Length: 315
Image (cartoon, rainbow, N blue to C red; front, side):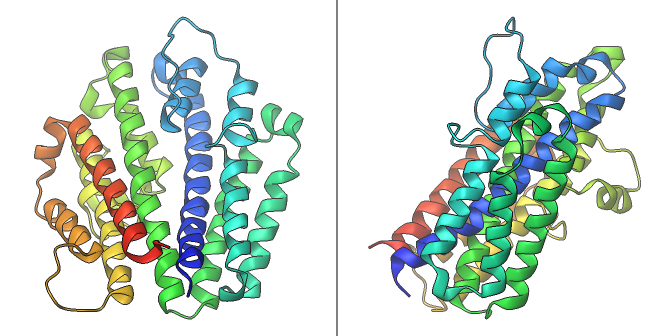
């Protein structure tokens, strides 16, 4: 396999995962605000600012009134905004085109269908009444693509590269969600005597990561800052957790580089190091300084991605 083609497969997996997380964050935030228990979380400006914060475009001017239609369009369908769902799906398809001979017809057709659905979605409907329909379809089509990847490809190096991309992106997006909701919980505290540790934003965060029901089943109590962060960061059995994603990345890099020899310069060594750091952490250590944790894990994930690029895709 050419290094360039391997790089295309890796980024195809990343862009598919990224588009789903952005769509889910938009949907859950928007509709959770309708029955939020406090006035701040119900405020539409608060919700729109949270969406922009998550996609890396925070609005610094708190006096500026944001237009709902403009923000939804920008994050969903704006071809000029690099982080929009439309651009992520478009880039996923372009990368799939470049690796066409290595993926199945079924997977390629599903990606094509995904792309045309997003490309042809009417702007007027999306910004007025189509958010639920659009984001639900994005989530369902992303799940179909993951099913096609697992069910129609050989579980060899091609599969390992795609899944490495998917899991690095999942860990990155879940961390960005944690960062955004941590920020929202800080802003919302004090409203209706709501404490930071019991903020409604932790429930919204779990729903954004599709982990609310399993978290309730695991802890058997209402979400708090500690239990939510522990579940989404350190629980290796939660499929959306940072720890689970790191374990998956390590498993798949071993397929690409099975050598047992101790090599400090390898990607496997770097992933193993990051993984070990969080495997034996207490959530209380993280909660003391969430900002530093978020900066460190995003930096580590960027280093892993760069190391993967350097070791396997350099051409």
